[in-house]
Image (cartoon, rainbow, N blue to C red; front, side, top):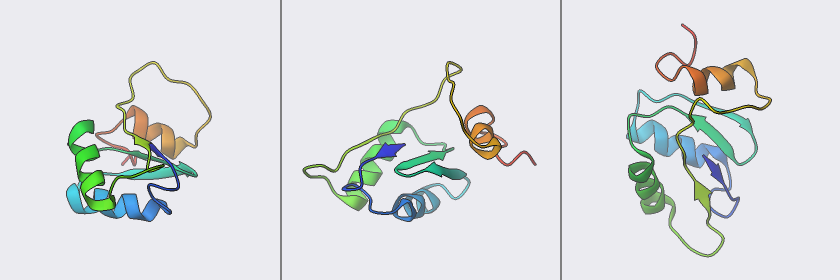
Length: 92
């Protein structure tokens, strides 16, 4: 999930919603305005929940997308585990 500061001033607002909706989810915050997470919910269901809890309005922008196998970039090992192994994101 990538989001504007207008949508959520801190990542903890988003992770609190995730923890409440899906206690089995796992999340990682690798950089500002970005949260990587696992969830059993669809992107559209999560988007609706975030909008209901955080509101909508001018500048309150975000995108939630499922990550496919076509990806590349620079992340910590933890970030890559969340993306590559959502069933076992902590590598336990």
